[in-house]
Image (cartoon, rainbow, N blue to C red; front, side, top):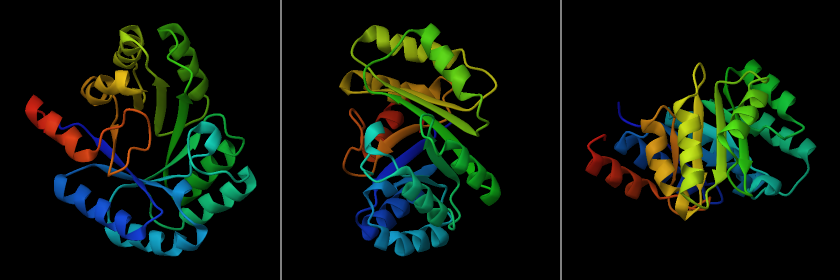
Length: 226
């Protein structure tokens, strides 16, 4: 089966978002993540119109600075932005496991019929498989359509831990791969080993080691899986 790719795109330029969605459709990409943490609130109406008109599988993400994103406001205001964003027909909304508005966003997603992605990012490194399983067990206390675990990879053992963990997950949709240049192989392999999807950038990389969409598809074509 063709691997699912989610294309992450900065939303500081409305035209860029429109072009990213158009390219994703032409290439047969599954999802487009709108990184709304890069958007000015004044741009929301235009961005949401694009989502409404696109018929694409869009993901709403407002990643805070404390989890590697660009949003630097408070959680109360971020919840208001999520409420505004989900007026559009997003397929999924991403919220961090550590966020104090997790329950609010979960309820909002349920009311709007939007799938919930609960995410966990470890910028310090990659823990053992045992610890990854504990993290995942804690995440599953919150019902979600997708669970996302992403860690910083520094060596081959980190890569092995992530892929071994992913290969042995059952009964849930899980996104799991490594950040950093040394984690690039896990981004490629994860959806081929049972991961729900992997991520690529439209143009500028939004995370360490993230490849752009065309490079990712070129690799998959050479592998014979695209």
